[in-house]
Image (cartoon, chains in turn blue, brown):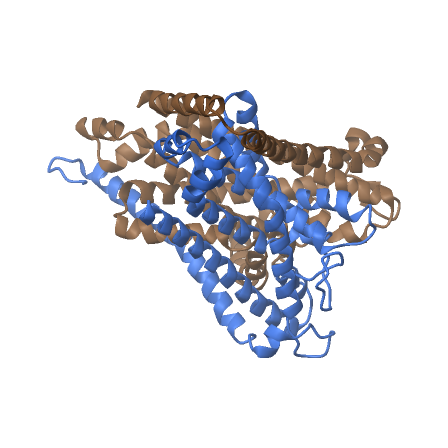
Length: 284
Length: 330
């Protein structure tokens, strides 16, 4: 690469220095992940035991207890968010992929891109004003609504790309066989696009699972078993936040334990998303 | 492009024929219902975004009427007297984000250049994977790490060291708390580096190879090619990536809340605690007792929404313009 017998020493040196410096920056960024991950594993490992995973939080001063209600709350709220986001996201993606030409569709795409950068706390405020304020109490459902909006941009984009990625010949084949529009889409296009849609969904779930800010005034948190999404619910991310800023050592320990659980869930979802993508590529 | 257009025309034509060629009434009805469902979902999505904006304006109307534009430059935030101004929060948000983007753009673009231009794929692939995973780490975990690891390191070693030699500068003066604007800026930098690095890498890879070949043929070294030919031709897009990352830093809530100190004061020192727009909402929203207090917090949310909307819009336009001009050139 940087060879050539008559290359001036200064040019050669700046080339080497440049590669070393940029390489160092890459190592720094990748190393930070390992550093943070390692720290969470080391600190969190000690906090995790059967009681931590199955019990409710104990009051201040009573050691022990767990985050079971946070785990269940996270699962319920995320599941409700997915139930709302999948139909809207996939159908909008389909619309953009099939009919999406012209200025209007371009605007929808632009809105989706921009929405993905809107702070989650602003979306939480929206959920508060339309689902908490009128009913005068916090609820898991309002948090799920905020999660839906947070998931939509990614769902819409990956669905559109997935459907556009289906070879035109396959779509023509379906129409040539006499299938109506919707039939071709449901029986032919969607199955072919599924791996990428699933990838997008898993990434969207990974994104919201770690969200904390919009939950503070929607799901609010709870000390109890709460399976009814009409009531305030606990989530893991909120428990980490509240425990971390508390002055108690035992709560700090539990915050690290909960962080380990959360980070594992998010990493598994991310790796799963890649795996789903590869599985799809292999088949087609 | 034209190939894709032709393909689209064939599909459209085939669809038209299928409609003419005996679909049963039920099928025709289902076909129409299907289209309505697609359009309905899209309209619902647009309505949600419009609703988001309208609700924020509606919720903050009381505060907008009461304080007017002065809300933006008044620095009093007093729930007791019900007088509210956003300046300390705007200051904290701008300063912490500026620190973050200054660091993240340098590190992120460097990493992108290395990964796209120099690293062999054996190195580039795992490193890219790690950087992408870094982007997936929840912000509350970053906050936890920042509070218990980064802040103590800064307050015990880094900040005293800097203060000993550069303490005469106002930005490095004053007492050291550990939590503060600098800590928040550094933590935000870590969080947005993956955004810059990943997008910039993709944009650099999208630069046509002919440019590199021409530059090498003229006798430039690999490094000169990367810095003087490849980077300038991806400039608009990379600036877009940095603006996008800036948008993330401006709106980041939980991690900033955990390490910025949460004090609504404007101080020149980066070591002093501050407050951001989003963290005051996170901390005080459930405690807001009067309706004007709630309305003022919602107005902070509105400011955040509008600013992030503009910032992100600009970033997207920059990146699109680069990819489009590249598409023309290729």
